[in-house]
Image 1: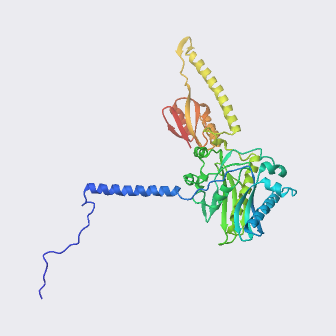
Image 2 (image 1 turned 45 degrees about the horizontal axis):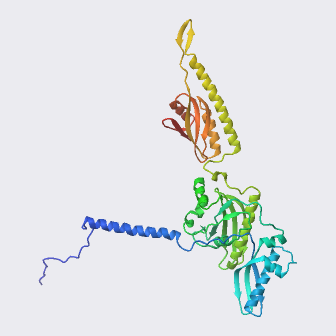
Image 3 (image 1 turned 135 degrees about the vertical axis):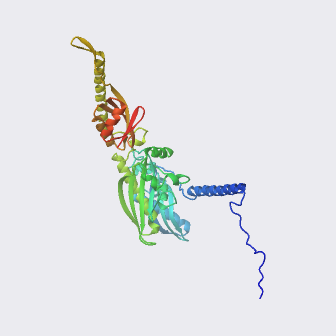
Length: 440
């Protein structure tokens, strides 16, 4: 049997590699890839701020609002049943406010400025609904024993509603019931000036739960200035669903300020998922009471560190610093007088001969920077530097709590000598041309 060996073997076509491609083609391919990546990144950024996130808050008025009024009436027609339901809601709302029963239906109708439909079912001869009744404060206030609203109002407070549900904290990332409840809240009659962002656009990026842990005053001043506010409130709601369609337990915590300070907490329960909006509305009313009581007791007031770039110092510490500055001024004056006296007696008489006096080291004032994470660090730093050998006095010229403060130190000797003396006291010293920076 004869075997035939072909002179050549067919080979599969080889795909071009980067080495085989011309350099210009490689550049074009890389540029195209970068362009695609840039488009995808832009779309991802837009996706973070796009979508149905915001819920515009209702316009606040000073009217008196009663929500959650349930009616179930019948009539000869759907229209008649609805009218009877609305009249019954007005009467029930008036009773909830504790108004006098002697008010007639015509008087009551004149005091009602609006009917808010929360839930509504209309049949041929039946009307079932949950309504809100809005009473005109100028007309109803006299009968209710209320004036034109509270005399004392708070400064504008940026309100950031935080919701914890399913183990996740959200603010404006997605629309939720807690955000909607605050958007629909009528805060005109409240003593608290709530500033409620809509949550649309970039609000979801810089007003989120993570920002409640930020302590930077400069960052908070920028945020508060953007919303025309003086301070910030954090009403936190934690919803726990027992089982699908079952009760919903809500734990609510009132916090405030750039330091996210605790104020008060309480719990409410909704029998089913349909009752959650009513529970949240009741929770907001409780929050308003908590914040109003804190305002009246002097607790809820704008943080002084947010007013300007200057850090507010405790009055006791400020008095101590002023006393130290006065003592430092007296010490420097005495040192200057002593130095002048030593310079005037440049010669001494010894056994009838004139000899040069020994040179006296001069007292020099140096600038020393030191870290001050809190007010206690200011006192500790000053006390330690004053106890350094050769130091005549030390006084702060600039204080930055949470940053770097500056003191002026009067020292008998050179800057190198002062640096060595501070190192001997346990400081880490960084020496510049005419100043020192110390830290622990």
